[in-house]
Every structure is written in structure tokens, then in C-alpha cells.
Length: 213
Image (cartoon, rainbow, N blue to C red; front, side, top):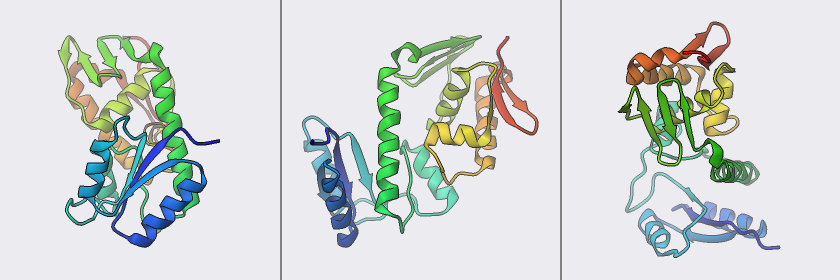
């Protein structure tokens, strides 16, 4: 049975490109490939029904990448909106597990319409429009800040460890440290102003969104 998902693979390393192309074809995915960023962009724009997923190298001819393998570079890539980040060398089996995890998360987001707009205390979150209104005013958040706030606000009163927060907003086993979560929380509290008090630190455990105003 054919896999319904369409994947675009972009990599200037011909060996890696061929391995990934053949690997995903064997798994019955509908696959297209390009050996540089410019050709990949053309394929992406030409696909009438769109691609479900794009797997791309970040340092290629024509269009440069922005990240490599250091933690700071990984965070930069994620802040631009990537769903996952795998450093080379990698196992194709691990990569396809990551792909399946991303697809599962996307499917859940698409079907979880009852939680698309939530209001907790003085904060309104629209996950579809990725909009935040706090005390009646719009708040500009980074991609990850939004993900963290949405995750906590959906379950007021629940306590989450830093590891749980990372796994929830970026997928399992993400190479981002606990300290990165703390930085996101600091940024969130500052941008939310007086509403920042709703994000509480649970000493020795992690964070929670306050259940009562």
C-alpha cells in the first residue's frame, strides 16, 4: 500500500541524497529530490498539492544554510520554524523515526480543533493563527516561546519537567539542554508582562501554568 505522504529531500551530497531517496521510496513514501537549495525551492513551489515534509541539508550551493551541529546553531534553526534537527552522520532508521514523529505531531495538531483557541486567565492563544493576546494586547513571541506557552497553558496546574517540555515542543530526544528551556521561560515572562506571573517555577522539578489567577 502506497504511503500518502509526499517528501522533498534536498542535499548536495549525492551519496546521502541517493541513500535517503531510495530508503524512503522503499518505505512507500512519494519522494522528490534536489541536489541544491535553488532546485529544491523550485520543486517545492511547483508541487501543486504541496509537500507534507521537507528534509534539507543546511549548507549547500546557491542557497546557504544557517546552522551546523553546535547547540546554538541548532536552536537558531529551530527558531526559524524547523520541526526537527538531525546532525550528520545519522542513521536512516533514526531519521525515518523522526519523520514519523513529526507527521504524528502534525496530524494531532490538525485534528485537535477543540484546543485551537484557548483562554486562560488574561491570555488568549490561537494555535492556528499562532497569535497571543495578553491583557487585551498582542504579544510577539518566537516560534519556541509560543510552543512552550501553548504546551503549559493547555494544562493549567500540571507540573512539567524541562525534559518533558523539550520533548513536547520539539520531539523526543532533542539535543537542547535544560538551560535552553530556562531561557525560553525568561523571555516569555518578560514579553507577557504582568501575565508572566502565571508561569510558575516549581523548584527542583520544572514549570507549570498557574491554575488560579
